[in-house]
Image (spheres, helix red, strand yellow):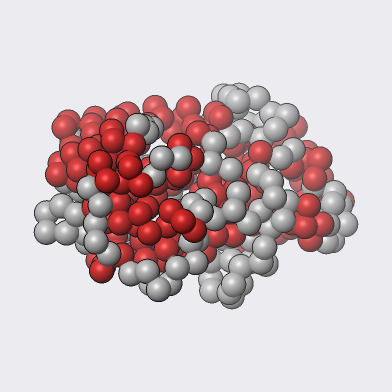
Length: 319
């Protein structure tokens, strides 16, 4: 999926996005940091500074962006920028919704963020938990069921452990090395509703070469969404942003974090991962990874057109 937004629409998209986050005194430094990184890395416009654009109001933004796909991608970036505002505010929700209403786009993030403002963290957390488990079920490994059994899955653990018999350069061996490197138990070793999800999720980590740091988790979801912005992949990005950036939801393995994209280098890794994902020729997260496991990792990456990261030694990648 090239660029996510075509060159002719980059300027009005940025101008509209700045308008949508101009509340309570203007965009925050973190919001501008993230939007500046996306503009430079994904849309290849380092000359276009969001801090100096002439903003577009909702009606002008809708008039400048008639294409449905561009409008959808405006929403995807706005979703990211909303979660980057700390503290979150009712004014931001109202302003963002005015733009999304004008563009005629919507998503689960809109309802959950509205709940956060209207009913507080506890209610939004509960809504997010329901969304997260539905999203996880949609992202299970091909060939495995959407719901994992209640107990351990020794057959799954043995199937994964058998990757040790594959060639040294194989995807399967790289997958086992990922688990060993981070001290993670193989899926199926213990009972978890996420076992079938983690096979697909962690295979995507390995193929993308993105490590499971906090910034890396957001970057991986950005990479996934940019490969193909299906509802499943957009949902993956939103879930990651809520857990690692917005701080009002959590995952069973990590808990929650806040403001990760404001940490040094994180916005750059996020935006660069969007750009890398957009250059892929297929969605590696939706593949049958057990079928791909015997192949050389380099061949799998070539098959899906996965480009190397600009800086594999930045602490967020393993290439």
